[in-house]
Amino acid sequence: MKEKNFYTEAHAFVGAIRIFEYKKDESPKIDDVCDLLEISVEKGHLLSNKLKELGIIKFVESAFETRVCINDTSKIEELSKEIKEDKFSEELKKFKEKKKGLEQKVAEIQAKQKARKKDLFTVLDDKFKKQIDKNA
View 1 (cartoon, rainbow, N blue to C red):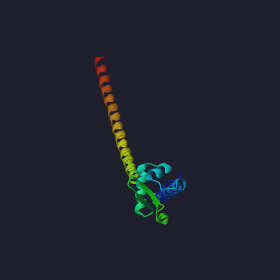
View 2: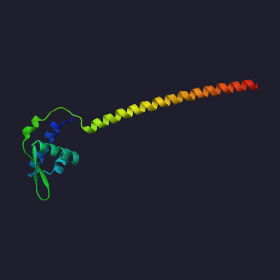
View 3: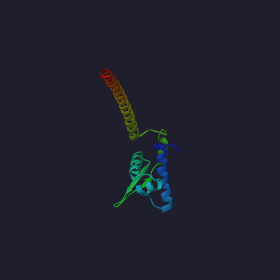
View 4: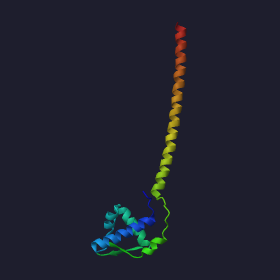
């Protein structure tokens, strides 16, 4: 599966607007675009707001709803095609690294406890053998 970046997401979003306009003869709402792309409404709003800021799409607001229209698709080509990790991915990596470090510390502590337990049993065994030798 090809990894997504903002460039490809912008193309998909604009393409979904075009498909909806072709099929229904009206501009879509953001929910309609999200349904067509099978993405969450939250992600759809995030994408649409970014695309609006860049002038790629525009919102047409009425008293009851907001619809999305294409404004200037040539601006999509100015977007970077690099795959950038989002903040969530970065934070998830940091969390996993911390967790891995914590798991290593736990493993070290458990190994030390096991060694101490073994040493304790050895000492107790020696004392027990000495006690048996005294009594015999």
